[in-house]
Amino acid sequence: MSHNDRIDEEILETEQEILRTERKILHNQQPRLSTIKIAFQGETMAATAGPITLTKVGQTATASVLGFDQFGAPFTGTMPAATLSASDIDGAIATFDPKTGLVTAVANGVDNITAVLTTAEGLSLTDTEAVTVAIPVVPPPAPVLSSIKVAFA
Image 1 (spheres, one colour):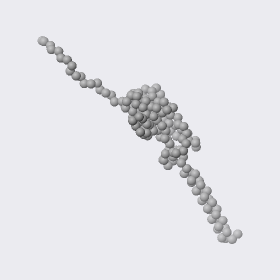
Image 2: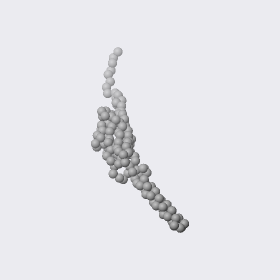
Image 3: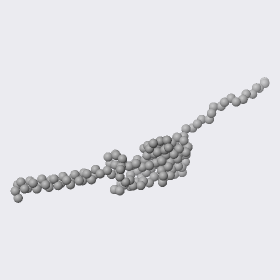
């Protein structure tokens, strides 16, 4: 084998190694679900990433889970189903339906909604967002003079 043939063979091996490395890099750059965020949407609010504040008894918002890839872009692949739960299991602050994501304000306080899912690669992702219920306290009306009495001493 001539010197030039050995150089050509080394160049070919180097090019093949470069192609293998490029394939590995491209594989690692495929969008993968890497973070999740809970978003809330209500009758008077557009979809907003948590946390949120509800200000009236009976006001509702629906929680949903958004996924993001390793580059921070919205995840466009198939998302595994998330399990939703609330910290206020008695519903004293807000009632929560984990199947639909519906949150309904009950009384002042903070309820934490948590979403958990496992990616196809086995990575466990979690997000917890606060739902603050802040119903303004309406003071009673100021007293109004409605009658007078004349007293004789």
